[in-house]
Amino acid sequence: MNYRTYDAFAKPIEGLRTHTASGGLITIIGGAFSILLFLSQVYLYLQVDTRHSFHLAESIRNNLPHYHNAAASARRSHKNQFPISVHVTFPHLSCQSLDLALDDARTNELNTLKDNRGSGLHAIVKSIPNRKDFVGTPFTWDARKAMEGCTVRGKLLVPMVGGTLALTISSKAWHDAVNKINPGMMMMRMLQTGGLPLTDMMIPKTFNVSHYVHELSFGTPFPLTPDPLAKSTFAFAADSGVGLNNVNVKIIPTKYKRFARSAKDTHQVSVIQHMVETQTLAAQGATVYPGLLVSYDFSPLQVHHTERRENFFLFLSGLVSIVGGVFVVVGFVGSVLVNAADLAKKKD
Image 1: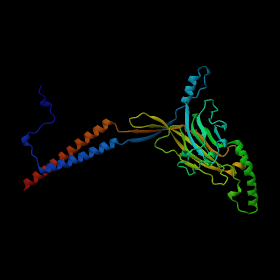
Image 2: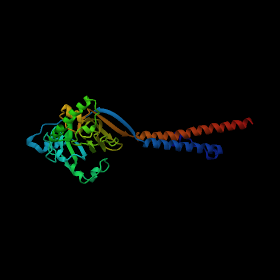
Image 3: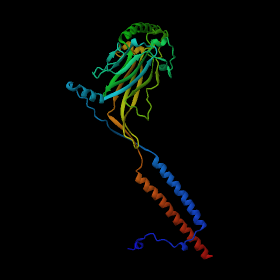
Image 4: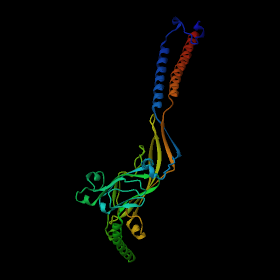
């Protein structure tokens, strides 16, 4: 069988082909242009295209424990737990005067906080601050005064529902403080009625709940956004040092999918914070004590952050099209120039 009959790419005879300087120059220009387009195509392929989309968050079911199979129930319960990492230093408030509360389950006698839902002990402790707890903070380290402070550090495992976490003055300490604050406020009102100026020095000094948040993270942090609560100082301007740092946190589930890697479940947080001063707490008889109050809730929407690249076969076909197209255009331009030169010679 003679395959020459099916040859669509007829080969010119070597002796009939001619090489010209203009053709060489055009070939060099076309080759350089082809290499430039090739490199640009490779660069664009290596870039990652990031896409965001919103989906309904996955539904979580928390079943009641089965007492005949407590181990299996504990494993299922632990799977649906959500970790909260805490590291907060109160440089002027002793651990004895500091309460830890999770969803109003309050304790100040134990160093370990227990969940009122019966899911066991949390790895969170209160201790006297050390030198490392003052590194990077605006507070000055003093070994003697550090005995009067308290550092709360550890992890909490909570169900994936809204709740509160409070690091506040103990109830006994707060009642003692109110007994000192209220008479001072009455004196301030009397002075104000008489037209005398008011100063913060008229508020009796009680407890100083100024604090530094080293870390307060929810779940696995999303790596592309910073933690809005980490490394932040909350100092109260009033001379009494008593107030409430009220923080509202909205937790946004985020599925993070990097190129050529498996997806990870992470969380972003949106924070709204405001400070409640001493006079407001004492005058309104607030049930929340001074310190740090964190209210958190989960968003019903989940963000999908996906990184992807162009399909490899599309990339390959693009490369072939670029190289082939450049040489076809160069060949066409070269033929036009050669024919134009021949016509000019014939006219001469």
